[in-house]
Image (cartoon, rainbow, N blue to C red):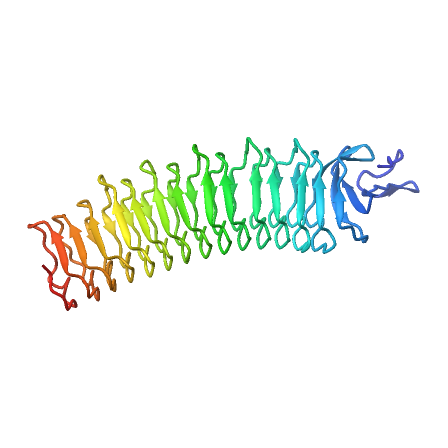
Length: 382
């Protein structure tokens, strides 16, 4: 409620002609304090001192719609275990429920108008499951970090545009279905989490898998949607449960970046025809055993230490490969057979250094290796 200034009162001051202007900041209701969003709507501002395990927020207080939950509204509230959010709420602020360590249940009313959820909104809680309303277009960074989350769904049709940085970092989430609308996985989106499987909509619009997206996670296998254009450095680093990565035949990815599968347990990979380069240390220290290039591969560059210290036993390189970097296949203790039908002269040294089981290198008759290529090999080449 706003008490109108009397005539003659200063428009900038708080008093005039002996009168005071008083603005009521909000309304306490059922142990929750509501502040004015404007003259006709309210925000959930803060929880009062009374400790409630369950809160059912009203859609209206004093006949005014409740339209948002402000930042840190329930931050650190250890009493709160469940909350129901009315459909009138359009936004949830940063850290709104962060560190509410016992919060397990969040329920949005059907036909929710919520369109945004802020950074760290539910981080470090015991939240076990949640259904994201259809109108939500943005979820803040680190929103579900270090939660007990094991189930999340997105109401259809989902309008979510991105899985933001650190969104599920360190969470218990084991599986997730990604709606069509999501275009990016930002850095660390699933890092250090329990994520094991990801299902994409058949018409996925995903374009980016950003840096360290799945690093230190429990991802077991993944099929990269054809819509993906960029995979960033360290995307699958230290994924010790990873067995297989599949690129669709129509995949738009052109580069497997630096350290993409560094120290991972990846066993096999299919290199789609549009991939032109394999970055430095891309598979270094990984468990990769099988690499299969598309018959129409245009891969030109295999960078330094790309497959250093891996479990490869054989590999057939496409004729498009023009550059093989230093130590690209070095220290591969199981590598025995290499097929490389290219006329390109390789000047880099030590490509196969300390790959002591190498027995057969099959090349075109006109192919020339630098004399130093096998200088450190103590094995006979057929």
